[in-house]
Amino acid sequence: MTDAAIHARGLGKSFGATRVLNGVELTVPTGSLLALLGPNGSGKTTTVRILTTLLAADSGTATVGGHDVAREGVAVRRSIGLTAQQATVDDLLTGRENLELFAGLHHLGRREARRRAAELLERFDLGAAANRRVSTYSGGMRRRLDLAASMVAVPRILFLDEPTTGLDPRSRAELWSVIRELLASGTTILLTTQYLEEADRLADRIAVINNGRVVADDTPAALKRQVGAERLVLHLSRAEDVSRAGAVLVTGTGPHLDADAREVTLAMQGPDQLRHTLNLLDREGIAVERVELRSPTLDDVFFEFTAVAV
Image 1 (spheres, rainbow, N blue to C red):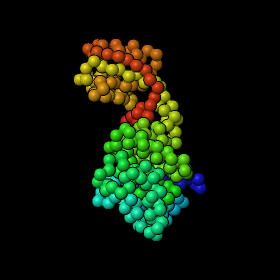
Image 2 (image 1 turned 90 degrees about the vertical axis):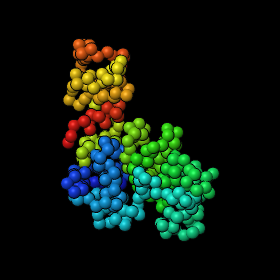
Image 3 (image 1 turned 135 degrees about the vertical axis):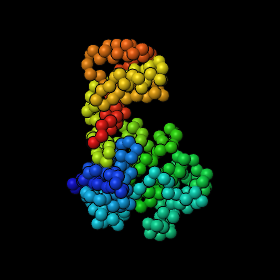
Image 4 (image 1 turned 45 degrees about the horizontal axis):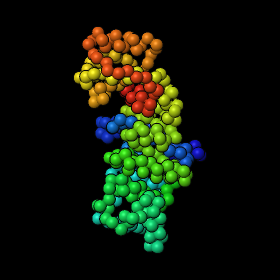
């Protein structure tokens, strides 16, 4: 597909007897952001590692920037940037020294390395801390520097593997702003994240991966429509009743239980469901403190598409 910056078909990967990827299919149009969601161990990072040539697939094909990841690894690496889950910057160097080091690794001359480092430090709001050791940086500053390092060579395609994990809400919002700027400049982005709000705010499309296979792929709005009905949220009086309520209110994909919040959430199946549900709980002696109806969210999408093994 000529308009696809990233295109994967039938990617398979096993580690020993464990099948991690089972035919992953992905397409990311040029200049867009695709968020890859899935439970821990579903294959998100393995997919990223294959697409960035860090790992060979056992089966299937993939192209990144028009280059085959298996046969044209050097060309792929020249067209991409990668921010992995673990920061790659050196704590003993300053922010400026880190970026100049990365520029040298990309074979930029000394003068160009200094120019590019200064440009990125300002772009990522790190100018005031440019000459401080990275060991003194906050978590948000370190992640911004890590993202800046991945942009030294001006990649057309950027892979972000859970870039905001562990950041406080303010630092996360700052990084979102940087990602939006990159997207607006024409960069294609594949983002893996555990934060559904992050995917909802940033992504043009969302792919949900479960048990090594993509089980849903569409725009955030379309995925919410696929989930369908409004959600009935029951706030129980006692946290210990949440699991009991789950056993009583069994449905095809739920309900979703949150003992910490004392919440039970299930899809509305008709106008009589509220009365029927409350009667069932009352017979079991389960007290309901509050009831609310809400439209589907990405949380509902996530639980809907990852509830059943594929």
